[in-house]
Structures are given as C-alpha cells and as structure tokens.
Image 1 (spheres, rainbow, N blue to C red):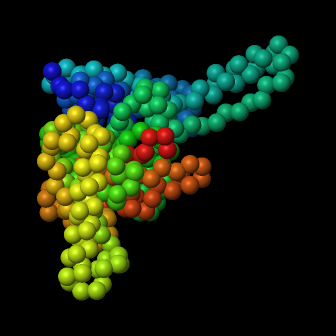
Image 2 (cartoon, rainbow, N blue to C red):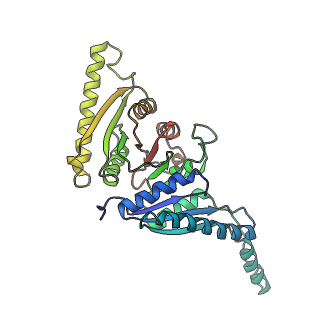
Amino acid sequence: MPQPTRLQRLIVATDLSSRSDRAFDRAIALARANGARLTVLHVIADELQPDFAVALKAQARAALEKQIAQALAAGPVDVDIAVKGGLDQEKVLRQVAEGAARGDMSVEVRIEAGSNYDLINETAAQAGADLVICGAHHKLMIGDEWLGSTMDRVLRFGSRPVLIVKSVPAGPYESIVVAVDFSDPAAEALEFAFAAFPEAGFTLVNAAESSLSGFLTGAQASQDALDRQTEELRRFSETVRARAAPGAGDREVTLLVRQGSPADVLRQHVTDHAADLVVIGTHGRTGLRRAILGSVAERVIATLPCDVLAVRPQGA
C-alpha cells in the first residue's frame, strides 16, 4: 500500500503525439505509486467545424482508451478520460434560430473559441488537482516557441503546480534539485516537493550572483560571503523542514551555494550530477503582471535538460 503523499489527484494533458507519451508514462507512474486518481485530458481545437470536432473527439477517446488499456496491463491505476473543446457552433445557432422563431429577438449571438490552456486550467481546478503534468512538445527556448505557448500559459495563468516532463521516465525521481532564493515561493515549492516525493534525495541550490557585496574584494572575502550564504541556506532548509510533512525533518538534504546566474548554476549541477528533476517556485502575481512568469523561472524551465516542477504560491 503506497504511503499517502501530496499527490492524490493528477491531471495529464496530452495531444496524443509521441512526445506527450513521456508525460503520460510519468503520470501513470506517479498515479500508481501514490494511489492517486488520474485524469487524462485531450483538448480539441474550438476553431474546427462541428462535424470535424465530433469525429476527432471520438477518435481521441478511442486512442486514449487504447493507451490506458496498455498501461493497465502493467498494474492497476485509477484513470478517467476527459476530451474537451470543439465548440458546437451548430447547436448554438440552432438555439438562436429557435428563439427567433418564437419572436425572441433579444438574443445576442457570441461564438467565442476557447483555448487549450483555459481548458487545462479549468479542468485542473474542477478536479481539485494536486498536480498538472504536461510534456514539452517543442524545443523550449526563450522566443516564439516558448513565450505564448500552451505550456507557458498553463504556468502563467493556472493555480496548480505543473510538472513539465522532458525525459523518458526510467523510474521514480531519486535526485531532486530545488532552486532556492530564500523567498516565500521557494519555501512553498520546497515544502510541496518534500510532501510529493518523500523517498527522493534532495539538493538545495542557491546561486550567489558575483555582483553581491563581498565577492569582488578578494578570495577570502568571497569565501566568507559564500559561507554566510550557505549558513542562510541551512537556516532556510531547517525552517521549511520543520513545518513540512512528517518525516521531512529527518531526511538528509545536501546544501550547495555556487557563484553564477541561477539558470547556469542549476544547469551545471544537473549536468554534473545527473539530477532527474528540478523544482522551482514561481512568484505569484495578479492582473496584467501575471502575464510575466519571471525571467529566472522562464530560463530554468526552457533550458534545463531534465524534468521541471514549477510551483506557484497558493492564492497567487
């Protein structure tokens, strides 16, 4: 019987491409390991004609049923299927015509296309999902392939932690790196990761920018500054572990402070130590500022070769 964790309701968004199979396989593994309920979501574009949308929904459901059946052959897992989207314009117009026939001319006709990220976020909220799991369908980079993409918008406008799966799953996450900048979002991200992956080993990484006071006044001064930063990282770790899920305070955690930009420091550590998951907290914003995910988070998510878990502060 799996021990209860933070992961009890999961959603994986799939476009049925070969790359999304990685996210699907990771989602199945997480659902099975945690005894969680998994919703497999496929979104049909609303811009399609109704007949095409109906046909695609049937085809998508059949494909998902086959994929899930294959997964069930390896062991039990609680899975359901959601195929959404495909605005039924014909039905809307028929209802308007029927109203007009009755003399009701006050109806305003508005046929608006939805979006992938809206349906993913809405489904996650309705299900009370603990985690949204998605694949990296394009080469992630700062530029048109990242900014404005479905994944980018799920992260910016959703309220749930998002796991971006880049690697073919080869077992449970064993080596997890958490980016720490001593902020509240970083603390929430670390606390979530402790609860979600209780069996994994953790390394907390803080990137000390070389422009910080003390780094430009000699080798000894730089070492003293690194020592102070490491002590702050130790206190941060102890504070989060004290309030985290039972057992978090007993686990061994490695602390690492390195000079450099956060993205560069994380990428170097992931490469050198073959870490399989990086966790980062995103700074919550409201209104128009929510459209800005944050340059550090964007670059980390876009450039790291391993899976990335992005955690938005609760209530943000």
